Length: 412
Image (tube, rainbow, N blue to C red; front, side, top):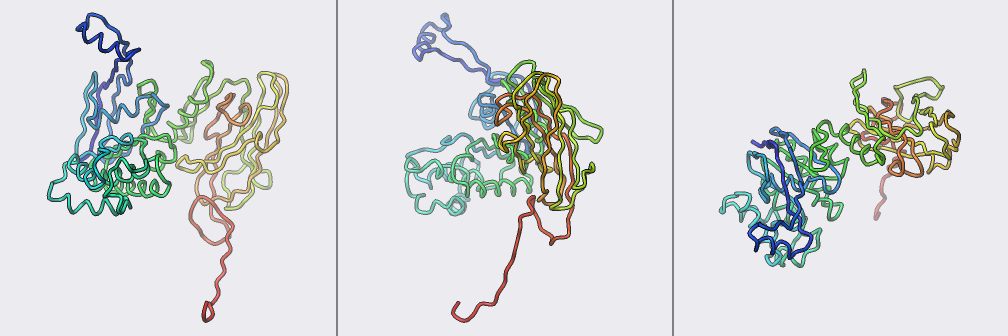
């Protein structure tokens, strides 16, 4: 049993210009107001069903961590109600719930008690926490002597010693070594397969797309998008690139059921995208390792000097597989006057694993679309890669492979 429901949640903070203003306000018994109010969250309503995995994304200051603190009970909402059903394990900001003077054993035991684990069970669980965290003899040392990575190891191992009904994870896992990040993600995936409800805050699109069924985008303390992770991330990326108010963002579902996102100022725009096979014929089906040409036609609506055309190939989960642009390739000099039209070709060898892939095109200035986004078109085209004549393999990349086997002589 693990379920989260929020109804009209809001959190307001008092902000004081100087620390002594809070004291003067208190001494005046509220007659003199020396603060201003800021809403970190406002009118948040959604539900996470039992066994569902939801990622929460947004820019810094959007209210993501505040939302998790409310659900975990470390702060109270100013307005609205919420309900969290089941045993909850929360891994929030680094250091929260850890006493620096206690050693690893004491902090692990404290975390178990906070999770509601029976006192008789704790001695049995503590060795597992030491083993999973791989802290060894450091468990005997005060946590104040730990590095940030060691603190993450202890906090995550203690929080996940027993499978919770609800697991809430803030961006604490982004701290520490890559090895333990992979180990932690594997643990979270196991919980997910066993039915744990997951609420996951991160800036990593790959983690959300691989772990989550839905994504929520927070902006200014409000939910502005709720839907499939790849669609929500497309909108998020467009918002990041949106520098001017007239740079509109459009999302719609096409005749094939694909959700597409398009944004930009339209100072220049992409007119069409066509995928062709090695013979120059429009195609959608390709064998592993086959050549392909992505032909992109564009128009300048204003005179400009060498805008950049970019290409991103994504897998079925929306994870980036390959991306580049004419700026990095040193090609694509399409300087011209308003109304001029051009064509850019991307010639690829599809050394990809079997599966469906989407192509996103971008038209911008300099090396990246965050500098000046003229036209960003997510999922502008689809292609499917099927097995070729080579030996079978798994994965998204068809890497050149040569195997050698020989009998070892005596003494080798």
